[in-house]
Length: 392
Ligand SMILES: *Cc1c(COP(=O)(O)O)cnc(C)c1O
Image (cartoon, rainbow, N blue to C red; front, side):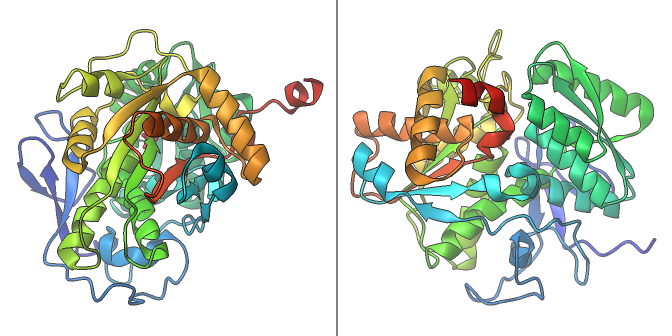
């Protein structure tokens, strides 16, 4: 196999050590995640079509880890709708409220973006076998992108994962292992399996490229808004990849001159049944303490001890944002209301984002005239049991 020349390197997010990007990187010796730094790339002017990829997230390849002439492992992820939700906005007292509907991605969630990038780089480095712990949607995406690359994937998921999500993992040929416990327990099992089998671990921030894929959330918002940025972004946060990725790319866009400041204030939302970032933010800590006995119906948010805690908290502070906890009862009610009101299939995580907008408005953090982008990170149907819905 000819190794393509990589025009980027890796830099530790904590101790600033660097290393070449060749091979399969995990985390720095200090235990913290690597970040991708591009060497002397000069993206052309904003909006210029730079590649033959006209559709999907890979059209932004000037900001992505892809070599000259290289083809990514893709299922057409990205280019999801950024929808104004005026009816909901008016009801809640906002004049400029938007929802980015990530449920329309292949595999039903924005995990497609990160896994497309991670699997692309891992396969280029010779990986043929993957493992991932998941609260649900990452497992679906890992199974699908592994299949797309002609590789195999073992997926560790909690027994409490919604049945439709588990079924999708199996549908895409994933080797599903269901465990009692939460994603932290699945993570340990995945790391053991990786150590004994040589499988490549795709866990959040244990490889550097899922962040790069998630950067395209920010690129698409900026492109859609004519290379301007909204005032605030509300992001349902589990491992934090998307929040970290968007904050990274906003700074890369500033540096490239594609946008001007100020950058959006970043708001993280979690369920009050698992809110390690919110608690750390409120206590003024620079890291999270693991949340004991995490539980929420928003399974993507059930991450008791995120590895990217320092990066998440740094982005909240640097952007002038905040962290907001909402209850599962609010999450469920708001997801149901907005789905019926706007015709968008909100996942519980999407419900959490709009519920957080209500809280932010009450606290005076979000003003009625501001442009606000909330995320529906996954498709609601993946969480539902149709029989329950039709009975009640
Ligand atoms: C994984 C997931 C999240 C959390 O995303 P992170 O980038 O890990 O914080 C939110 N919503 C859904 C639907 C998810 O699948």
